[in-house]
Length: 308
Image (cartoon, rainbow, N blue to C red; front, side, top):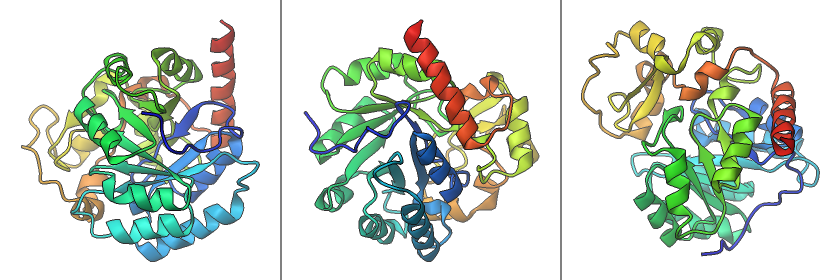
């Protein structure tokens, strides 16, 4: 059950990942997070073409020092409906991504390629059965996406999810779902996770690709403003109520589940550009900061929790 490889932790100031967020995290956020001392990550599909993705990878690898800065990660959508899946994986290999995070599909096809250059592969999973399948495929770590996570989300409580997975897996676990503070990062460790996944909190940063209206709606939102629905992408996801209403949806009467089509969802503005994802931790967010300042705050909160 022990993973075959893991990334270096010596550069981390806090055991946390800035989570990959569709249409929100790009090279500016990744570079800033890594330089501040936490893992920075982004979805490959945030680059509109594979050519642009290569430009982003050239910039990330050119500006980050692998000895000094925290490692970076690329999130690959492994579902077969993703027409760029193989091409983006090849670029991750070419630029030797320290961490590859697979999502929405089996990581099996990526494991050998990533291990071939010494990288680590983590699988984003929303159920215990998916965790077992990812382990069987040979991943190095698991990202447990628990209830309350922004965007595509699981339905299990983080308390229950970590506890059950730890019964059969002693490798690295990253826990996501409603984590917005350094205190919550420490709480994830106490539960048995090795790292925390923070996505929604990083939407409200200067480096975020989110438009200002999105950021302001997030600042005004609380937990009750997060609506879970599978109508838009075919997979359950958490959305800001106000953005659903602006796009013409009735949050109290959402349509039936859509088909899972990653390429179509990535290019459909009504699904992702007009409807904005956010997690249940929205109620703990009340300011927009540079990533470096946010990480500094998280580190101080984390240290205070350790000393409490």
